[in-house]
Length: 313
Image (cartoon, rainbow, N blue to C red; front, side):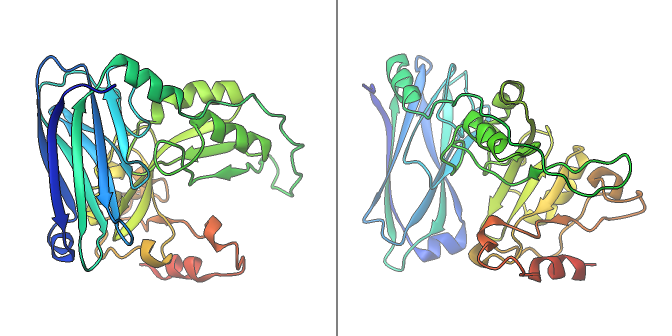
């Protein structure tokens, strides 16, 4: 069972609140003797509401689960997927709320922060999906290729339980192997908590796992590839490409024409050609973009995303 209640925040958010500031921070003072935290989010009569959840400690960003979870725990040994195991609790924490969708009559939220303990953390950890056995890899498909080159089957946009997926890192790696993939980038939303699990899963399942993060805002989603640390989604989206390039990563815009997830950012500051891996270093590079996405399976001939990318300067 959880221990003492440290803070309760109740608020009714309106569309005007969302328009003013989408990401809200709710302060919580945590005493020095607390060993683990539990955060619960309740959204009353939440039809039409989508409220995202995240957390930041006095030492920095801890994680994000978006709208996928209403309860999280954070401890030094283990945290709910999407959140980093964290030591050093004393001080003012911030519960992060993302006002993703707020209906006209408002969204009433109650955030309760409690002291947790090792027993509760272990119980919640046991509820997470387990990694499956190593599957058989299907025969490799033979495709025509230039001399000395080999085709690799890859998926560069995937999610696990560290954001809004349903499989563990190992479970997703196993699924990829069973489908014949050679490379898998795991790009959970607004978190890098899955990165620590990639080396062991790659070795166990025999697949190249690429660390990634899907930087996610209402104005667009983009992948940051590489072991480059957390890219803060709260910074202006127009700066993301340059930030990723400055760290030696690769930046790619996701589903640029996908309805309410479309890319709506103007004035993107691209990274250099060398840093993004797409040119000779003689100026800003056109950012990479996802030109096919699983949600487009209804029409595999749809060429608008490629045309969108080709039309960019």
